Image (cartoon, rainbow, N blue to C red; front, top):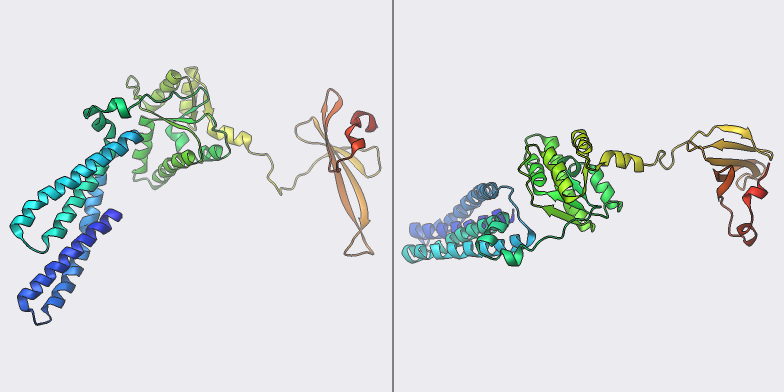
Amino acid sequence: MIFVEVFRLLLVIAGTIGGLAVGNHVGRHTDAPVVGITLGALFSYLLGGIVGRLLDKGLRGAVGQLRATPASEVFAGSVVGTTGLLLGLVAGLPVIALVRSSIDYPLVAAFAWVLCVAGVRIGVAKGREIVRAAGLSHILDRPAEPPPGTALLLDSSAIMDRYLMILGRSGLLAGGVVLPRFVVDEVRTLAESPDPVASRRARRGLESIEALRAAGVHVWMSEEEVPEFDTVADRVVALAHRLHVRVATCSTEVAEHGSAEEVDVVDLRHLAMELTPDHLPGEHLVVDLVKEGRQPRQAVGYLPEGDMVVVATVSYAKDPLKPSERYASTHFDMYRIAGGKIAEHWDNLPKDAALLHSDPNATNKP
C-alpha cells in the first residue's frame, strides 16, 4: 500500500500542476485556475489509485514467489533497487530537457519510483543468482551450519497445521526445524490458491514460521531440491534421510512412506494429543470408591493409571456463614504404589520436621 500511496501522491502533484497550467492558459484572471487545480487533483487521485494498484499487482506477479538467503536478499535488493532508481532518473532527464513543463518532475519521480520498487523486489527474489553473477558468492553464500540430528524436517502438512505453533511455544522444538525450499514453494503456491480454506491455512503456516523464529526456534533453510524423486513426499523423506533428521508431518502418506524407508517420523497431531491432558481444569470427574478406609468416613479409589491411590477423608465443621449449620469438606491424600509399597505421597500439609522423617509405609498400615 505504501507504493500505491506514494505513486498516487506523485500523480496528484503532477495533476495539480497540470490543472493549474491549463487553467492559466484558459484564463489567468478567472476561476479557471481553481477549477483546473480541483479537476486535475481529483482525476490524478483516482488515476493514481487504479494505476498504482495495477502496477503493484504486476510487480508482485513478476517476481513470483522466488526467494534467497537473507544476506543475498539484502545485498541484491539494495543494489538492484538503487540501480532502478538511478535508471529512472537518468531516463527522465531527456524528458525534462525536451518537454520543459512543470509536470515533468513529478512524472519522472513516479517513473523512478516504479523502477526502484521493481528493482528491490527483483533483487530480493533473485538475490542468490545476482550475487553469484556478480562473483560475490564467496562472501555472501557461506556454507550453512548443518542441522543437528534432533531437528525436525517439516513437510507442507506440518507447516500448515496449528499444532506446530503450539509445540514451538511450549519449547518442544528445541532442536530446531528444517524447511526445504521446495516445501516452502508448495505452501506459497497453496497460499495463492482459489480455495479459501487452503489459502488461509497456508498463509497461517507461513506466518507461524516467522513466529517460531521470533520465539527463538532455530530454522534451517535447505536449498536441496532432490530432483531424482517426483513427488514431494518422496523428496521430503529422501532429504530427511540425507540430512539424518526426523520428518515432522500430519500426513498419513508421508508417515507410512517414512516408516517404509526407515526414516523416523513424528506425527505432530499424535504428539500433541499425547501431550494433551485427559481432563481439563474444572472438569468434573467420577472416581469409583472400591473399598472403605481404615478410619470413619474414608474410602479408597483408583485413578485410571492403576498405580495411583487416592484416599478421601470427609470431615465436618461449622459453617462460618451459618453458625447453626455444619458443612462437609473432603481431604485428599494421593499415593503412588510401587512394589506393593508407597513410593510417593502427595498431601496439602505444611512443612513439618517430624513428617519429613516419617515412613508412610509404617504410619499408613491398615
